[in-house]
Length: 233
Image (tube, rainbow, N blue to C red; front, side, top):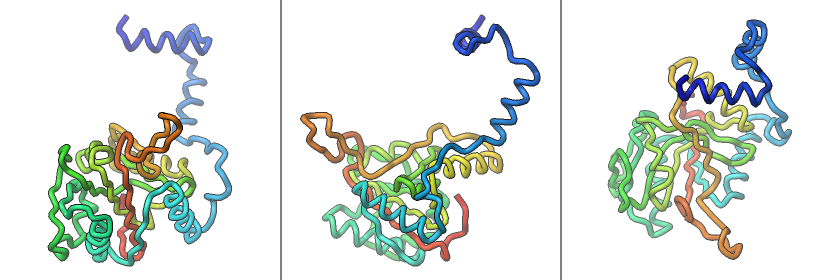
């Protein structure tokens, strides 16, 4: 018996099963996986699109993120440059090699110096896209892969994220529905799925809030109106 069989055996024992499930039980389990029932979802996130967008902004700011709203993708470089200048941060950026960022005219903002790839310990500012954004909590749902090194979420002291309005969903469950659809269409689950709610913080020591304890001390979101997006992930 290999390790996998031993683990599954312990799980079956914990569930009170002496062996494999019957064909009827297996069919019921497969049906449940194919069409999962939603959990109880707070009513505040089940609103129209305009209110979902406003809720996402409000909840993100409540979690100590900052949000800059722009009308077009062409406006993103200027917004990023202005934010970095306002915080007295360097204009050197390590950016995710994400195709969704390729349509942004970064060269139009010459003062930004962009390197694409994995961040180094010396990189102070990281920039990425997101898979989805959760209105209920103001969270970003980020999937890892060649397009998004996980270290971009953790290593740079400042994390700038470009979000399109059409990526905003109501509740966390809606984000998982979107991910399942993406997997069905494109194949392959991401290695990790990370929910980012505001900058990193901790109050473990004497209940004193410390920003940047385990990751970025700043989270800045550039929110682009949907009219300029293509609807992709």
